[in-house]
Image (cartoon, rainbow over all chains, first blue to last red; front, side):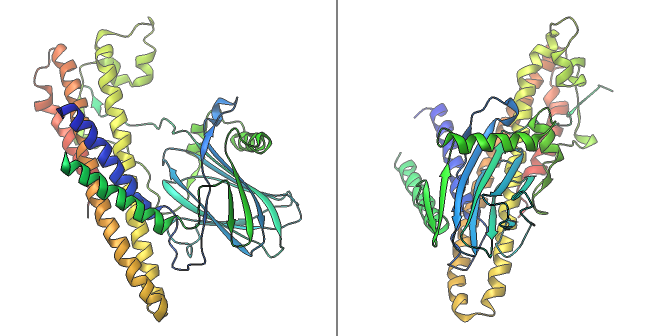
Length: 163
Length: 241
């Protein structure tokens, strides 16, 4: 095996190790075995609006339990994230909360408005959890998660004029 | 080659173990039952109406923003523990450049007035791109390190508090704690490897800059100046614990 192949292999191995190790934090931590979150699987979004380049997950939910748990993973800290929860029946109220490290710590919370909509835009790295609770069952709603392509962040130049 | 195969096997086993432990009831199918509820997931190309509706919603969220960058800059971090990439450069770590186009920044280099880049800017173009690319990758690595550390700290705090109250959950937590601790040890080793790899790329980029400086009559630029920035970056992105 030549040097170049070894180098490529070492890059691949390091990447695999980081992916494997990062699975540790693929969703907020829970000891309760009843909490079995569903992944919002992101796939490429192709549309006419160039601003929307990125990935999207859409889930249509019929909730027959008081609380459901979802999570998304693989989000870049350089990507904008927009999350919507919209009820089929505007009168249905859903309580929505976002979680990062554990399900018992709430990072953000809110409820659907008079139009049956709750939305939030934020940035985060890696993964996050979404908890949806309701007292009126069954509740039908849609979850839309959009993660934009990485943006070109501004960086300070390390170069200066010679003295 | 045998050692490579063994490493791949260990990694595959490790990845499998993590998947089984963490992915819960996600079975890879579009339709998932969580308890008695029903969840149907759609990606691009499936259920066009659902995805088109998603596009409308997201477009409204972007509002008058000309690009997603505006939305990104306006958005707050989800968690207090979320890392904010830091691209500032310490004054002592800044290095002199003899190319005025570089000093004006990337936008200036793309608009030189005459429509043609100067010779020095052309020479710097690839080195500058490589440098900024690896700066971004190092920042992502650092953020991954921070978020993983935050996760482990939070999981330990939560698990320890529950275990002190509930004896049965305490036993389950003891096993889980060990598994988390072991995978975090592996993560730290992986971080160090990736850090070493990316610092190598950074060094290459700075050597490319040094070659451009040599063409402008500044030999030994790296030995005289470039190393200062490399040392600064090495310190900023190394794993601290």
